Length: 71
Image 1 (cartoon, rainbow, N blue to C red):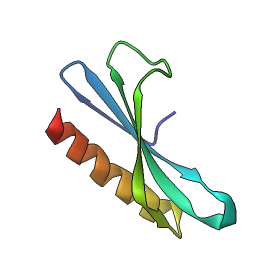
Image 2 (cartoon, rainbow, N blue to C red):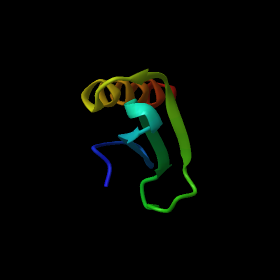
Image 3 (cartoon, rainbow, N blue to C red):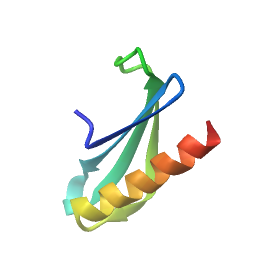
Image 4 (spheres, helix red, strand yellow):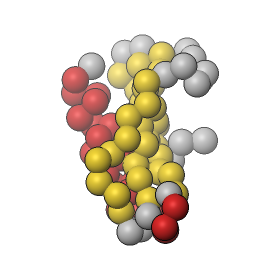
């Protein structure tokens, strides 16, 4: 389950984090059609790696908003 979910039109954008080796975290954003919860959506990763899950989630939310504006 995604930490944050946004919808715009028929798009569903989910922002979450993943833990990486070495104790770093990275934000992940998945874009799918609102009706689809399958894994065939477009995945986007934040450029920055973070030291905490909270920082990574903030980066993911910012990326999700930029992608929402683009769609």
